[in-house]
Length: 287
Image (cartoon, rainbow, N blue to C red; front, top):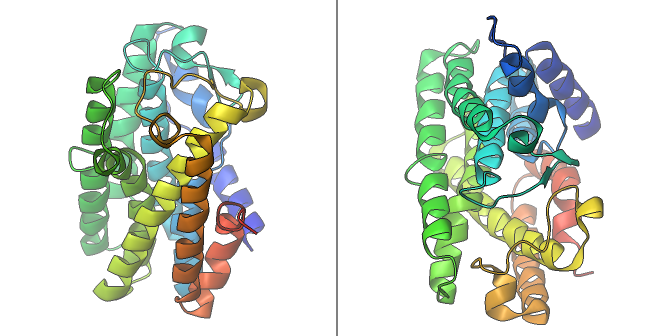
C-alpha cells in the first residue's frame, strides 16, 4: 500500500506545484525545481501512513497537508545548503538551487515554500479544528521550538565541540522534531486520541535521532554521487561521527534502531503494518 500512497502523493505534488505568475524570467521554475527533483518523501509518507492506517478515506483530504509538510522540509534543505550555512553543491542528485540560479533566488524560494506550506494546510478539506491543530504542530516543530533553534545551534557552534547531551538536543530539534510532527499530524487528521498522538510523537523523536546518526554515517562513508548530495562536508560540524567516531556511531545507531523496532511493535497492527515499509531500512540494519 505504501507504494500506491507514494505514487498518489507524487501525482498530487506534480499537479499542485507552486505557481507565481509574473514577468520574472526564472522564479516560477526555481520555485518548482527542488520539489520536482524527488527525494524520499519520508515526512509526508509518515503522515499519510498514519491516516491510511486509521482513516483511509481521509487520505485524499490529507494530501494538501502532506504536500505542505514536504514544502516546509524542502525550504529547510534549500536554506541549509546556502553559502552562509553548509555551502553545499549537490542536493537530491542535482545542483543546489543557489548554484543553478543565485543566492537571492534560493533564499526567496525557501521563504515562499515556507509560507505556502501553511496556506496549503489552511485550505485543506478538513475541519477547522483539525487545521488549527496541524498549524500549531508544524509552526512549532518547524519553527523556533524545533528546526530553527536546532539549525541556529548547529551554525553557531561550528568548530566548537559540544557534549553528547547538547549534540542530541541540536539534532532532536533540527531533524527529529519535524519527523515527530509528521506522525502527530497524521494522528490529528485521523482523529486519534491524545495519548496515541503523544506516543507517535515520541517514537518520531527516536526515529529522527536515528535518521540523523545514520545520515552522519553516510556523510562519512558514502560518495556524493551515491548519496545524491554533498558529503564529507561535516568536518567543522557537530556530528555524531566527529564526537563519537565511526564505530561508536554505528553502535549507537544499532542500539537506537532496536529501541525503535520495539516501540514500533508496541503499536496496533494497523499502524505497525503501515509504518513498517517506510522504516524497515532504518530499523533493521543491525540484523
